[in-house]
Image (cartoon, helix red, strand yellow):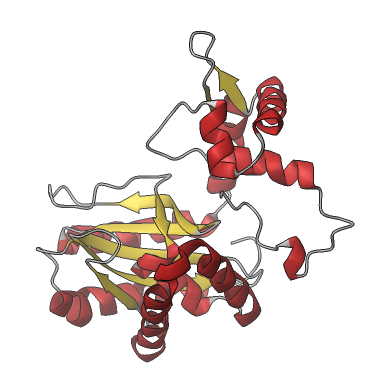
Length: 267
């Protein structure tokens, strides 16, 4: 299920103030992935776990407002221009993204690696900036890509710096989603958080994808928002020793240096 809420009604949100219809509309928008364009009513209903009649009404309303658009030929839905305008505004206002970019590009060029910045989106980390070298083996993910929190160095770094109460809420959500796979993934998360406490970065090799390796670090802003960074690429080119001894410490130093810019909620 697409999760657009950081607080769950059963976990402390004030139900008298929580607008369920709005939450459902946001779930519809959040179920679209970066690598696809069109979805049917049935596909949206399956991803959001909403009744199909509810999806039909939500989709119609979102089309009227310009947040979705519908194909006259197929009846399928795609994200609309109004949503794109909101996203561009949000990303443009993320000042740390602009500050970090030259440092990210320098690290990417130095190691022929992909370096990205992301924010939490439900149970994923959403790329909002990406720098890569010209090397053909750079990780081919781009803006809008979503990485699973439970299986990536970037996700583990995000969890490591979150406020304890918010981290426990997120871990509970991940537990419900992962089911029988959760004990193994929880163990990996705990190991990643311990590694971050010791060395300032996390490492994941061949977990999320079989030939992907990476390191992660993160910053928690004064308003509680976490900005996560990673450096990743092919596991065959970037073995654990290189990540542990060179790239991870370099990423940690970069992120530590950027913390000096995080002084207000406006960053």
